[in-house]
Length: 282
Image (cartoon, rainbow, N blue to C red):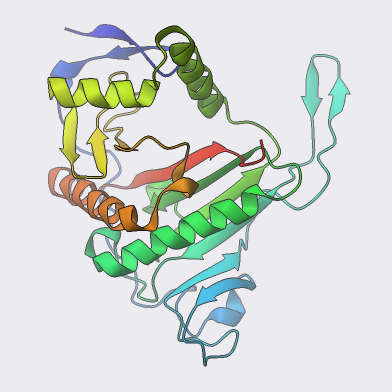
């Protein structure tokens, strides 16, 4: 029967209806697009300016022989400007300040995460970690995140495999709630809330999707969206940017396993995945 579940990571109660089970996607399938896109090698001059790229050391800046590439976001919602709040009584606003960029994950426009070589996906995760660490150190930044939107129905700008980096001068409500819940749990029990949840989920085996030596994938007890999945590190750490490099292949393996399962069960659905946390200086 439907029931309310209290989210252990925040103040919300979520209404769950387990009996509904799998539902056919309302948005169709996110299948590969055209073999060549605006982000493909050879189109460097038609998109945002290059910020960073992984290419042979002998190749010049802007050459098309890259394996991964970071570019300025061509349709950024935020700009590097001063965050000045205008107070109008109960209503306040501020310019959309911050930083936004795109990580082009692979030269092949039709490549999908579940088909990348494990070695390449591991390098993508290293680049994620590097970019998050870098943008988090910008003055005034309080929240940074990486988001992958796959499929136009999920908000993807391109069919080409890519991720977006966003750094803003305001806190994220959901992350702040998780931090507050974790702090409250520690004050009472003297232990990490995330570690406690991982241990309990592995003991009960009710919501564990898969796990390996480094990570566990679970359906959260109080999921806020259909098919919501969390991938959590089994070793206690404060954030993604602190993960050791030798654990990243295990994370890449986990991402591919979960993505392949979704694709098999839901016929390649559009989806969003990502990572967010307070700024390293926040």
